[in-house]
Image 1 (cartoon, rainbow, N blue to C red):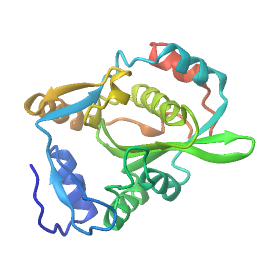
Image 2 (tube, helix red, strand yellow):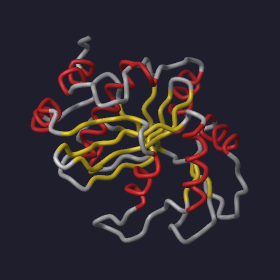
Image 3 (cartoon, rainbow, N blue to C red):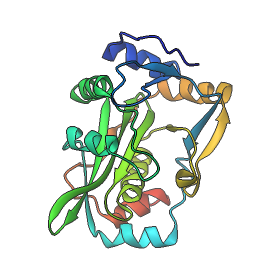
Image 4 (tube, rainbow, N blue to C red):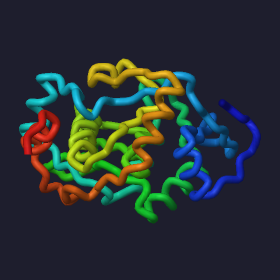
Length: 225
């Protein structure tokens, strides 16, 4: 479902939209208009069976990056709004920044930040919406090799450990397919969403101060403690 008309939405309306299986987008950063999107086929990542390629697992285990959570929403959304290799355009406009920033302040939006160690600087990350036991991934970025992938691995381990039941990716890309992302029909997605919204998950099951190790993350994804 798409509606190109101007949408005057609030953070509360945005949460209701996610609970109904829809989300807003903009054509580009300079267009103030938002429109609703409800894909016919929805992308999800499996919380059981999430795949970590062998080379990436070595990178995660090495702890060459420091991975934190919820420490700098503005920097993460700036990174996500930056130009991509395949396009100079971004769908993150000022209204998107305002809405998701408000939800971050209320504890519904979360970020994963990936820092290089020497010098310490933000080199990757992602953000998304948490509602009940569902997490809706919004966007990710990287400026160092594997940084966004490391963010995703840490995210999925946190979701699994925290009792989440649904990891929504909106769409499936080649990038996400390597981790086991799949498309399911809208009606099947809505059943999974309704079940996830009936539960409560714990985003804060782990600290977000960078102390969670890569080994701990990989164990969580394979059923370890």
